[in-house]
Image (cartoon, rainbow over all chains, first blue to last red):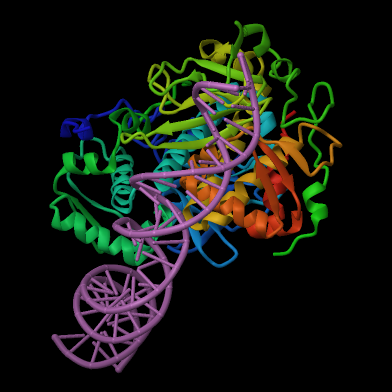
Length: 258
Length: 258
DNA sequence: CGTTAAGTTGATCCTGCTCAAGGTCGGTGG
DNA sequence: CCACCGACCTTGAGCAGGATCAACTTAACG
């Protein structure tokens, strides 16, 4: 299970297919253009402050958002007020493509940081797909990558210990975020989350996340303090997280449909 | 939170778009035809016995399967041998559309019952999409519905108690399976799972699932014994599962792209 | 009717939760 | 520059939901 730290820093072949800069699938600026014809249907931009909802649970769900700048997360709220964070969406992500039409959304999306996204109405999608088949296929691919990530989170939350879950989430976010800064081989990054965010994403309480982070610090693996993350021992982190290098590779995969 | 049992039996507008019979999105026989042009690229059928793998973890992932008959599940295996069941795939489901190409699968698929599926190589997908845009959009929609289900499972495993998780899973499977037998308003069904399957899907041990099922039986809610499920008190089940009727509706949604 | 996989139950343990009380950071207004 | 405030982090003590281990029973199937 021990993996060379090289794997953590291997530069996967992910670049924006339009401008050739590195990105999480699509670079922030080109995303609307790569979704090509879609950009013509774009109706405008939204700007949100940290903590505001891009859309809430039970809304119409007739808009697709393309995040240009900032982080967001998808979430679910239960009857008792508990929150499950489903996914962290980074710049370039497409958010809001729902399986139901005319029905209401079953999850919400909230800005973690101040955020800019462009808005595309879902209504024209059928026409767009007819004229530009590659757009639909790309949408399928993006969605399928989200699905894989969700399966991955489910496995972590369902089967791993608290320490493994936290390590897993942090490593995932580190790898995904680092892809946006090509060549930036630093071990330090701004991770704009509270311990409660981490708890809600891993199915733990904020209090317990705090204890886990202390352990990880005492073991000399990572330091996470007030939204600054520092990775001390990458190999140990990969090891604790129980990450298959195969898996990490899939996080940084480029679409085969371009 | 109490919901009329009518909601459990509302006949959602889901029918096979080809033959107009009820189904889980696509009816078993028509699925390959509805994916229209894809059926021409179909290379054959596979027949599996219960317990055999449709594909394993770390395989090539260059095939798409369309389940015609039988149940399967997608799963992940961890380093210590623990298994997480990610999704139960019913007849009509499309399985094996992976986000990576040239890379290896990060999860496996196994037959729960004896199973028949038709096989479509992934290689021709780009051409198919070019010629038949609606196929790609339909694929995106199917994938997005899977993603929603995964989010739903994640929420359940991350935030609910053992009893809630088990109730949630059973209710989901009951609703999804019942859609395949239109008009079949029975409270009893064949649910081809062991208690260990339920445990692996909910992040519990088989032993604890057994205790939970005993509680649910003693509370007069459901009976599940050797793969026969009987729902005694639908309202109470919906209540315990913490299911939003909205959510149940989305499980039985028809694609808007047909 | 024997074999095997699956279900059942009890006793005990431990991981992570709850409740509660400080402590620390960063921003804001004087 | 400093005082203040609210959000967030930190730590402790006690509790409990679900895991583990182990023995035994029941159902299904040839």
